[in-house]
Length: 218
Image 1 (cartoon, rainbow, N blue to C red):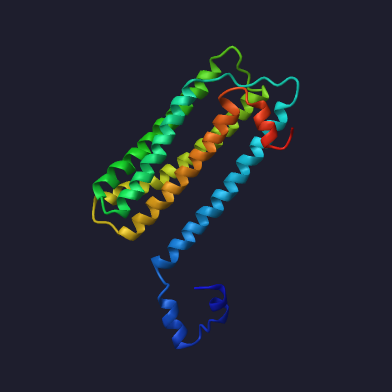
Image 2: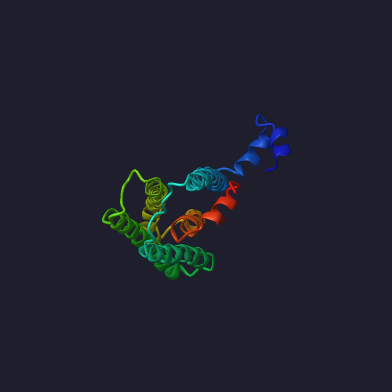
């Protein structure tokens, strides 16, 4: 229903009641949830952009020391990439009525996300064992803040995933599951993009010039 039609609606008439009933229930909830997710992702994107800009600004000081490169982060990146692909496959399979493929890929997406989070914990612990480690060093502090916030959002996604998985093994409301799988795929793709940007610019090597130019600092 367009904005003009909404403004011209007369909810006190019987005719309008019949029109409104067409949009009641789950059909009206789907676009609302999709819009809510988009707004939430926009807020999260702004949060990470501000943190990355702050990181870039701090890199310009002469006492800056970058975080040591951790090879484990490459493995974690691969796990998250596979998780995102699994959720995309789950969405594709459900749209093409391949329910068993959808179930398996949905399970795989969550399992690979858990692998990613476990790998992040190992990376945090690995960093603490290095002689270089000092939480007061700005680069290390930023590392824990950025990766911790990202992991926290992944855990939030796992709660939705965990609530969805049991439903797909029995007779389920296809429309509701399709909506949830679609939103999960979108959410995981977004978090993969955030991680690739952070990893590529901040943690995979000396990318100072590229980061400063991107943030408009240089």
